[in-house]
Length: 203
Image 1 (tube, rainbow, N blue to C red):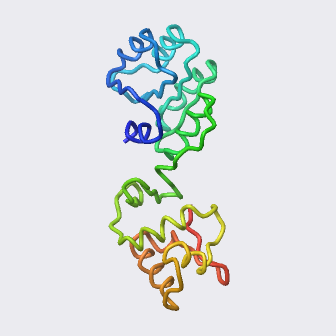
Image 2 (cartoon, rainbow, N blue to C red; image 1 turned 90 degrees about the vertical axis):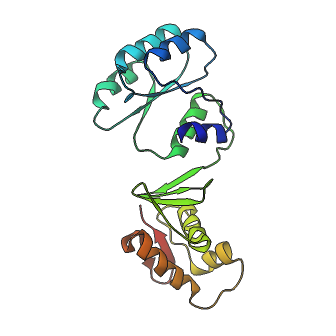
Image 3 (cartoon, rainbow, N blue to C red; image 1 turned 60 degrees about the vertical axis):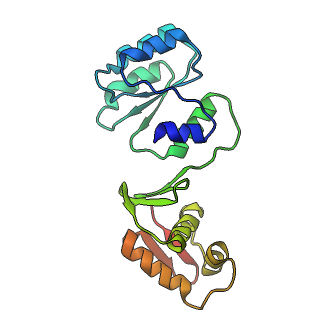
């Protein structure tokens, strides 16, 4: 999934599956950045980071670490001015940090959108809740997509939803009907009604 997201956003990733191959790849040169999964089998993060900095000291590193493994790697990352993300993380955050490290200010296509436990894969048009796929109709998906793209914490009005999803005036209660469908599928607590203003996707 990560390799596919990077390719979709203009990168050319090389996937390395064994920890010993990381240093060898650094010695070969050519990589502009390293995304390092510290949960790789057999990986000793401190040793691998030291090897990378010895072989390619100017290559930026972003480590992907679990909350449990964070403490034993963060001190090393801070000492070397490298970056890290705790899994699970929004894909757009990794893409933004990579572009920042590479000095690339081009707009980043948002392949994955997240609001709390709700995630949208915009390429597949698939919605996940707590990392589990949810079966939605095309219109239900369009409503979720509109809500998750709206600024966090701000209510999206019925008129705005009608314009975004239906492109014209629907029947009088169509928005309420679809919000009801989505509350049953996503969880009632995840879509909040703000009286007189509209709807908020919580997260």
